[in-house]
Image (cartoon, rainbow, N blue to C red):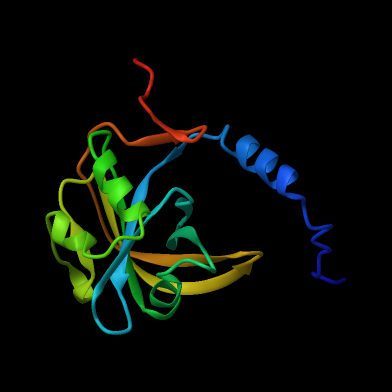
Length: 170
Protein backbone atom coordinates (compact mmCIF):
# COMPACT_ATOMS: atom_id res chain seq x y z
CA UNK A 1 0.00 0.00 0.00
CA UNK A 2 1.36 3.42 -0.91
CA UNK A 3 0.91 6.61 1.08
CA UNK A 4 1.73 8.88 -1.86
CA UNK A 5 -1.21 10.98 -2.89
CA UNK A 6 -1.72 12.81 -6.14
CA UNK A 7 -2.18 16.46 -5.21
CA UNK A 8 -4.23 17.06 -8.36
CA UNK A 9 -3.91 19.93 -10.79
CA UNK A 10 -2.66 23.32 -9.69
CA UNK A 11 -5.68 25.59 -9.17
CA UNK A 12 -6.11 28.76 -11.21
CA UNK A 13 -5.99 32.15 -9.47
CA UNK A 14 -9.80 32.26 -9.58
CA UNK A 15 -10.09 28.78 -8.07
CA UNK A 16 -7.57 29.70 -5.36
CA UNK A 17 -9.65 32.78 -4.45
CA UNK A 18 -12.83 30.70 -4.41
CA UNK A 19 -11.15 28.08 -2.20
CA UNK A 20 -9.91 30.80 0.18
CA UNK A 21 -13.41 32.31 0.37
CA UNK A 22 -14.95 28.89 0.99
CA UNK A 23 -12.43 28.07 3.71
CA UNK A 24 -13.26 31.47 5.22
CA UNK A 25 -16.72 30.14 6.07
CA UNK A 26 -15.09 28.31 8.96
CA UNK A 27 -14.74 30.66 11.94
CA UNK A 28 -11.42 30.44 13.76
CA UNK A 29 -9.82 31.83 16.83
CA UNK A 30 -6.82 34.09 16.48
CA UNK A 31 -3.44 33.42 18.03
CA UNK A 32 0.01 34.95 18.08
CA UNK A 33 2.82 32.41 18.03
CA UNK A 34 6.20 33.51 19.42
CA UNK A 35 9.74 32.14 19.49
CA UNK A 36 13.30 33.41 19.15
CA UNK A 37 15.00 33.70 15.76
CA UNK A 38 18.44 32.27 14.98
CA UNK A 39 20.02 35.46 16.36
CA UNK A 40 18.09 35.18 19.62
CA UNK A 41 15.73 38.04 18.78
CA UNK A 42 11.99 37.77 19.55
CA UNK A 43 9.90 36.55 16.60
CA UNK A 44 6.14 36.37 16.32
CA UNK A 45 3.28 36.06 13.90
CA UNK A 46 -0.51 36.00 13.83
CA UNK A 47 -1.91 32.53 13.12
CA UNK A 48 -5.45 31.21 12.85
CA UNK A 49 -4.51 27.61 11.96
CA UNK A 50 -3.98 26.62 15.61
CA UNK A 51 -5.73 23.43 16.72
CA UNK A 52 -5.68 20.79 19.43
CA UNK A 53 -4.48 17.32 18.43
CA UNK A 54 -4.34 15.13 21.52
CA UNK A 55 -4.84 15.25 25.28
CA UNK A 56 -2.58 12.28 26.00
CA UNK A 57 0.04 13.19 25.14
CA UNK A 58 -0.83 16.89 25.10
CA UNK A 59 -0.27 17.99 21.50
CA UNK A 60 -1.26 21.04 19.45
CA UNK A 61 -0.58 22.06 15.87
CA UNK A 62 -0.43 25.10 13.63
CA UNK A 63 0.83 25.75 10.12
CA UNK A 64 3.20 28.29 8.59
CA UNK A 65 3.54 29.37 4.97
CA UNK A 66 6.93 28.37 3.60
CA UNK A 67 7.32 31.94 2.28
CA UNK A 68 6.78 33.56 5.72
CA UNK A 69 9.54 35.78 7.05
CA UNK A 70 9.66 33.80 10.30
CA UNK A 71 9.69 30.40 8.64
CA UNK A 72 13.27 29.52 9.59
CA UNK A 73 12.87 30.64 13.18
CA UNK A 74 9.71 28.61 13.79
CA UNK A 75 10.82 25.47 11.98
CA UNK A 76 14.30 25.27 13.53
CA UNK A 77 13.84 26.44 17.14
CA UNK A 78 12.99 23.90 19.84
CA UNK A 79 10.23 25.91 21.56
CA UNK A 80 7.36 28.22 20.74
CA UNK A 81 4.46 29.80 22.60
CA UNK A 82 0.84 30.09 21.47
CA UNK A 83 -1.16 33.07 22.74
CA UNK A 84 -4.93 32.86 22.21
CA UNK A 85 -6.04 36.46 21.76
CA UNK A 86 -9.00 38.10 23.50
CA UNK A 87 -11.72 39.99 21.62
CA UNK A 88 -10.15 43.32 22.63
CA UNK A 89 -6.75 42.40 21.13
CA UNK A 90 -7.36 43.09 17.45
CA UNK A 91 -4.46 45.55 17.54
CA UNK A 92 -2.12 42.73 18.65
CA UNK A 93 -3.38 40.48 15.85
CA UNK A 94 -2.89 43.26 13.29
CA UNK A 95 0.57 44.09 14.62
CA UNK A 96 1.84 40.52 14.31
CA UNK A 97 0.09 39.98 10.95
CA UNK A 98 2.12 42.84 9.44
CA UNK A 99 5.66 42.86 8.15
CA UNK A 100 6.93 45.83 10.17
CA UNK A 101 9.86 45.64 12.52
CA UNK A 102 10.00 46.20 16.27
CA UNK A 103 6.66 44.51 16.90
CA UNK A 104 7.75 43.60 20.42
CA UNK A 105 8.54 47.24 21.16
CA UNK A 106 4.85 48.07 20.71
CA UNK A 107 3.34 45.63 23.23
CA UNK A 108 3.83 44.37 26.78
CA UNK A 109 5.69 41.06 26.98
CA UNK A 110 8.24 39.27 29.09
CA UNK A 111 10.59 36.34 28.76
CA UNK A 112 8.87 33.02 29.44
CA UNK A 113 10.28 29.51 29.75
CA UNK A 114 13.24 28.75 27.46
CA UNK A 115 13.52 32.47 26.72
CA UNK A 116 10.40 32.45 24.55
CA UNK A 117 8.54 35.80 24.43
CA UNK A 118 5.29 35.67 26.39
CA UNK A 119 2.58 38.22 25.66
CA UNK A 120 0.51 39.68 28.47
CA UNK A 121 -3.27 39.61 28.89
CA UNK A 122 -4.23 36.86 26.44
CA UNK A 123 -7.22 34.52 26.82
CA UNK A 124 -4.92 31.47 27.01
CA UNK A 125 -1.25 30.55 26.75
CA UNK A 126 0.56 27.37 25.71
CA UNK A 127 4.33 26.85 25.96
CA UNK A 128 5.35 24.07 23.57
CA UNK A 129 8.32 22.01 22.57
CA UNK A 130 8.51 21.52 18.81
CA UNK A 131 7.81 17.81 18.28
CA UNK A 132 7.68 17.59 14.52
CA UNK A 133 7.51 19.56 11.27
CA UNK A 134 5.25 17.98 8.65
CA UNK A 135 5.26 19.01 5.00
CA UNK A 136 1.83 20.15 3.83
CA UNK A 137 1.89 21.68 0.34
CA UNK A 138 2.93 25.33 0.51
CA UNK A 139 2.86 25.20 4.33
CA UNK A 140 4.65 23.29 7.07
CA UNK A 141 2.59 21.93 9.94
CA UNK A 142 4.26 22.32 13.34
CA UNK A 143 3.29 19.77 15.96
CA UNK A 144 4.04 20.86 19.50
CA UNK A 145 4.20 19.07 22.87
CA UNK A 146 2.35 21.23 25.39
CA UNK A 147 4.75 21.78 28.28
CA UNK A 148 2.86 24.48 30.16
CA UNK A 149 -0.55 26.11 29.73
CA UNK A 150 -2.80 28.66 31.40
CA UNK A 151 -6.36 29.85 30.71
CA UNK A 152 -7.03 33.45 31.66
CA UNK A 153 -10.53 33.66 30.17
CA UNK A 154 -12.36 36.44 28.40
CA UNK A 155 -14.12 36.48 25.06
CA UNK A 156 -11.88 35.16 22.26
CA UNK A 157 -10.93 37.08 19.14
CA UNK A 158 -12.76 35.38 16.25
CA UNK A 159 -12.03 35.57 12.50
CA UNK A 160 -14.67 34.69 9.88
CA UNK A 161 -14.98 35.52 6.17
CA UNK A 162 -11.98 37.84 6.23
CA UNK A 163 -13.10 39.91 9.23
CA UNK A 164 -12.97 39.91 13.01
CA UNK A 165 -16.29 38.92 14.53
CA UNK A 166 -18.00 38.90 17.89
CA UNK A 167 -19.48 35.75 19.37
CA UNK A 168 -23.25 35.53 19.49
CA UNK A 169 -24.83 35.96 22.92
CA UNK A 170 -25.86 33.07 25.15
